[in-house]
Every structure is written in C-alpha cells, then in structure tokens.
Length: 239
Image (tube, rainbow, N blue to C red; front, side, top):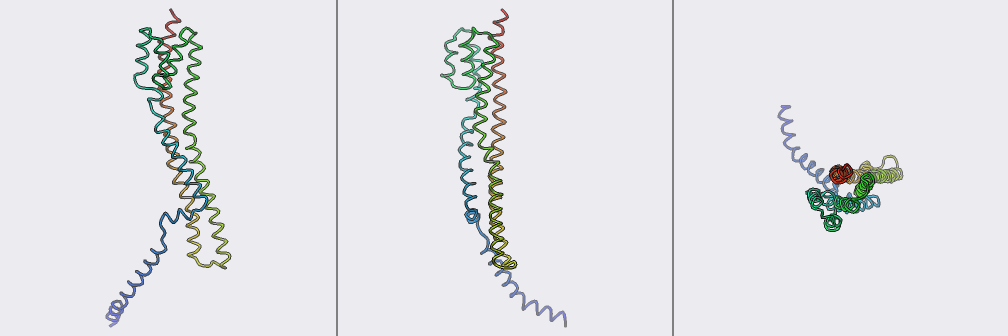
C-alpha cells in the first residue's frame, strides 16, 4: 500500500516539479547576460582597455607588414653584391641602398662608398648601422609589450572599483541584502579582469614573436655583413 501511495504521489507531483524546473530555468536564462552587455558594464576602465587594444592592433599590422625579410636581408642580395664587386661595378653598389632599399643594401652601399678606408673603421661603422636599424625594429614592437603589461593592471583596477561599489550597495541594503545582487556585482567587477587577460595574452604573444623574428633576422644580417667585409676588405688588406 505504501508503495502504491508513493507511486500515485509521484505521478501527480511530477508535472508540477517539471513546471517548477522549467520556470527556474527560464528565470536563469532571463538573468543570463550576453558578453556585449557585460562589456558595456565594464565602464570607463573597459573602454580604456578596448581603446588600447585597438591602438595596439595598428602596431601588429605594421609589424606584420614591415618586419619581413625583404626589408632587412633580401634573399640573394649578398650574392649579387659579390658579383658586382668582382666586376668592378662600384657605382651600382653605392646606389644599392636606393634601388633596393633594405638594411643589408644600405650597409653594402656604405662599404662600397668607403672601400678604400681601413677595414676596422668600415667594420665598426657597418656594425653600428646594423645595430641601429635592428633597434628601430625592436622599438616599433615595444608598444605591444606595454599594452600586454598595462591591460591586466587596468583590469585589476576596474575589479577593485567594481567590488567597492558592490559592497557599498550591499551595506546600504542592510545585512547581506539580496544575495543575487551581490553575485551580480561581483560578476560585473570581474569583467574588466577577464577583459584585461584576454587582451594581454595575444599581445604578449605577438610581442615575443616579433622580438624573436627581429633577432633571427639580425643574426642573418650580421653573418652576411661579416662575410662581405671579410671577402672584400680583409683580403685587400692582406695583399
């Protein structure tokens, strides 16, 4: 009898329980906010973070376009320069920096213009030219590192401001007030922190990628310049 009574009670109460679950789910879905709404609630700090990311995107596209091998160490340029040197076409070598603009071309043009000077002096100045141009490429990627550092700090600052506002609201409501109000306030405060990390991670990755790429081209550039100086001026001084 007890079993039959429990079965009858479950049969009659199951629709009511299902309706309550659906109502609760509907209430939860109504309270769930889209990411667009959450970003709008991030306030002034979120706007600063988004502005920084838009500004940094300019440097990313500039580096993707400007930091390429043809702008630093064009493939085959050193071999063509050796051929021009052997043929005595020094005028073309001196104009190489203008006809085929690149870091290696400008160094080759400098060597050709000062081919009668001592090798030590030419080598020192050529090394300075290479170092200066590599430093320029590093400097152009530096804003990405700044944004990757500042964005999480701004997110932490926004979270602190949001938590202060939330606890002030709860204090005015008395006791704990509405727990859902506290949870909503904490959620809003964490938006800027999440946004800061979401911005910092890709920007930091791009910064180290461009830094690694610049260093790689620098090694190639120094190798080509050393080979040309050795073949052109060191052999000349030993004659």
